[in-house]
Length: 338
Image 1: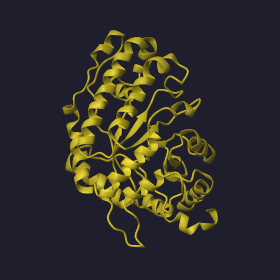
Image 2: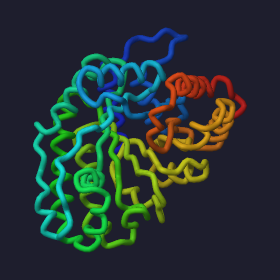
Image 3: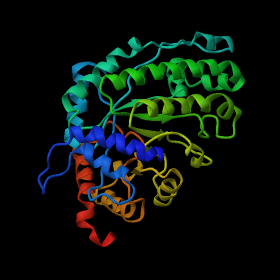
């Protein structure tokens, strides 16, 4: 049986326990909305939509409150838990300095895990709890600064054990978060874009890619629904990520033709359609609606309308709510596009 079909069945079983009986004129449970878009044999009646940004409070009760307030105010269909855990600081200037990197134990992530657990307790029946997961390269940037890229290029073989240790650290976090109530993970990929190393670079192909992909593989092994986020930048060919696990694909691209191409290549639902620094933020709502009309009329039928990355924190919840509601009603108000 096809692996994606097996995952859909597993996700359906989980969702069935969470969905309540709906009246004919009510919007389905948000978990159910995502389940419907995973079934690519037909277009869902209601198109899901979700946008994300960071919050002032990173941990504790205030962080939980801010996640819930944003989720409810925007009417989002996914509750994405932001990743805010900073690694230890390691000065890396030489090949030997990579030996400073250590595997972070589960306990290191406890403040983040507490946020996930509390969100799951409060909203598990009505929302998908999807924590963000950073890549080994991004965490190394946080630990040593972006200048570490030059050291990696100079000593890629010495850097690989550090990538492995950080991947194993993230694995500890993923497995613990799943036990604390996460439904799946928003897994970020970094390193293959031109701004870092590029897809043809030996740094990427020989030393980094396998540990970048490893995170998606771990998430895929423990959870039925995961979003692969190919982080923004310039890429030679996004098809190269087609062998990564991930139930849903979030791309740096937002043009309709590229979204359709991605649907054909990945054969999985796409999250996106809007640029997180474009019309979505700078245009009028009418401008946004016009772009949404084009994306939904010409793009993949199984689309979760969102942005290609996290939107600026200053974006108002009221604006995002208007956009989400517009998307939810689109198939009912645009029948000519069916």
